[in-house]
Image (cartoon, rainbow, N blue to C red; front, side):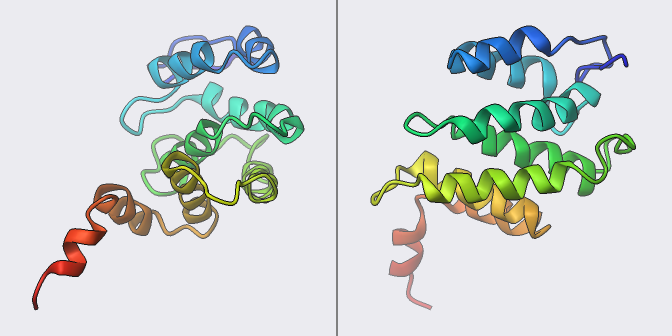
Length: 154
């Protein structure tokens, strides 16, 4: 099966799955956001990545790639909210289950005092699973302003 990137070009994910297994997250992250996702645009390689990388993510314990959850959110948003491309039949019953498993795994490895990245990662994939994309958009753009909002005198 030929996979396509966000620009519609043929795309191979196997080399990046190897990098991901080797925890070369920076190289993978650059590829994900430069080739597989662009402002809501995705291709079939983005969906395949979510499915294939999930098993690798679920084996991570002490060094979780929190960005994986963000990518899952963006792919699900592109499929379900933006309807950018039709979901291929081979992924229709799989990607939501991958997201649920990833969230459960992340919650089991969330530190007692999570970083902002970890908090946002958990929130975004939760919103994807519950199909509350507008809620996450508000959270994402309002993050850091909650103290200022609380000080407002209505």
